[in-house]
Image (cartoon, rainbow, N blue to C red; front, top):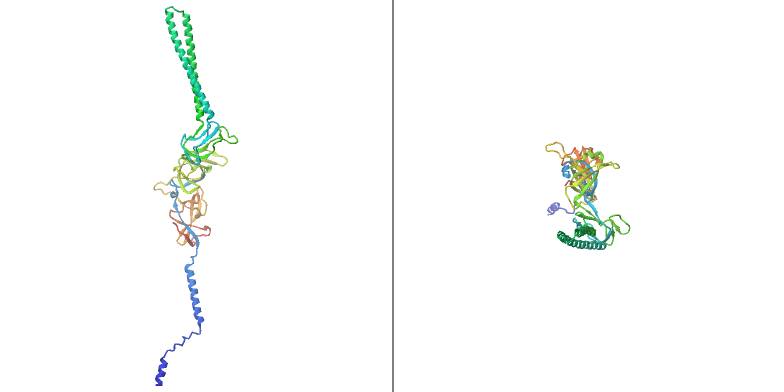
Length: 417
């Protein structure tokens, strides 16, 4: 019985017996810390950015898509928007302003009343001239009646002379009276004509007290106020003004630019162009050269060129700054000549001039770049025309180009739209 109990005790599992390493807990902690460090290193390697210089991507666009539908830009010049028809509206006479009917920004039509002057004295002069005309007409009527009576008297005396009832001397006296009355009548008729002209003059002076717009346009300046005196002759002191306001024909707006005389041979009449206003730099307005003014400015060595807008828009205002790109001819169908492409100027190393010089760009090749030499055209604002070396759709790098080299690794910060 004791032997059986001993055998059973040998088969029993002692749960208080440890696995042998219970005396070394620091080992488990060391292994856990090592695992944590390894996981941290792996996560850092996974999330860390790949080595390389940060760049953004720009896509080369055809020159025509930049608004240069007529071809590539041959020359750029700066100037201002001006109006060919602009006038300071003033009265023909000196007078006191009694009414002003315009405000800045208001539109007026041709012959529309813009102001009125005090017409008290001129109205009195007009009434006096009209009265003088009526008096002259009445005098002429009276003389005409006398002439008719004298004509009848001469006719009667001729009959009496034939019947020998009166002498020829009496007939001569009656004829002389008739001739004198006829002369008086002619004088009276002339006096009527003079009085009528005086009425016309007074009426014109009266009409001049009403100031009208010479043509349709927009008021840009309101110069006079009620109670001021305007004079077309000179600007006096105090409240004397030379005009009522300034009207501008917005349909006559154009751009005047000064072109360096060294490049004026690139500009011709009717040449296509593109206008960009300083206020709207992303708006390309189709334009055309009106004329090259045939004289040069000696002090600036420039020639003035007039450029017309092909599209009218209310956003175009007089005296706005503008930049004009004069375009070359578009490539013919089947021709191998290209107008070039347009890229951001920040993507190019080098400066392009109108005659074209060398530059450098870096093409995106996956995670590296390829250095490429290009021929540059004109630079317009933030855009650079590349005449040769790039094709439409090529992707180039923008960044710290001085640190890039052929085959350099890059990190793209922004992909193209």
